[in-house]
Image (cartoon, rainbow, N blue to C red; front, side, top):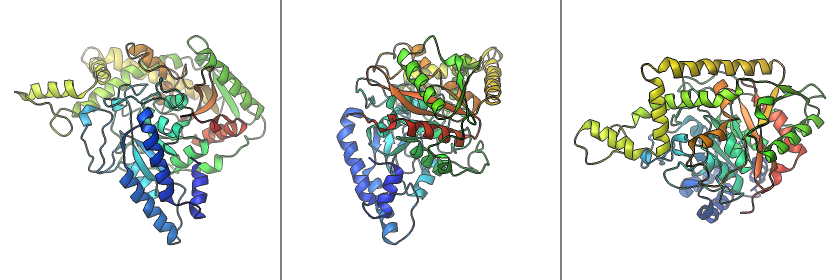
Length: 485
């Protein structure tokens, strides 16, 4: 599959039709899904109908936008009107939303073609997509390995060419970590830049929708279309959205004018040797491109993981209280009382990881423990933000590995939740700070598995991320390599 820009040129020159491009994507999905299982639902009829509308516009001589006719996949925790939205959970197995999420509404207006809803960890709780209630998604680079999570289906779909771009959601690394594992670009925007209206909530102060693409430019185009103020979302930012394409250019600012900081706490013990080597080499490339490199300390970075696993489950315990078998979704049968029906519904409808996080969150918020756990975690969150603020007083961009390792084998960490949680060690602090960050492919390990480098910018400085990431991408060829599947 070509890039968004290449496909757009083919469409406006009438070299190919949107229907032809869509059929090609659907055929690839048909051939790969028996091996990959990226999608929970494929929507061929809707996709072809959307493609026909784009072709009709072109035939009538109307202008079309960059996303018109482009096959896109949507993580299955974003509401799509009239189309099942399960969140990878039995609790919502048959839920059909009566409304459209803001992001999917904006994509429809842009003429994008939705080919399906992608697999995910249940309610976005997980780092491997193994917590899905329905199926296990494989990594396109090695089918015995996981694609990362919780947006593993979207990452695998983009990596394998089942779609051009995809949307994911990122609460603690759920876009960037699977992007690293699957060898694609994944971005978590500034908190509030993209509307969360219609995104099924996990942890409301951390969740953020963002793009996956095979290139930095594709991610920038997709973000441009979904970003912007939304009165339906009380946390949405009233800011002007720049044309991110202006920052997608091959050269950095004149030598020494772009300062890049290496977060020293992210290197050393616990980091896979192959990952460290690849990221170190990538930093050398940035230096050769003219960036000024310096080591920066974020001493509270390591406290991100325990802080997150108090705050996120606490918010989840409140957000998931609505699934009680009364209003909508799954309801357990054969209950003799309302309380029994509540208990059976939640016991049967939720998976093990969701129950674990609800239990942790309920405990942390309970009387006698609120101050000791939740309040203390919020204070540490503030300290982590302060570390980032000090770092950005010295540099423009922070870099570190996206994940401590490459993709692991399916089943390798399911019996050890703590080991699984460590997969998000590098990404979680960014969500706690509400900052934008991007994972870009920067190499492969000895087993041919992709490695990602994470770039972090200050609030609303997505432009810097695109500028530095694109310059690096054009100086290397990692984005040209594709899995042989």
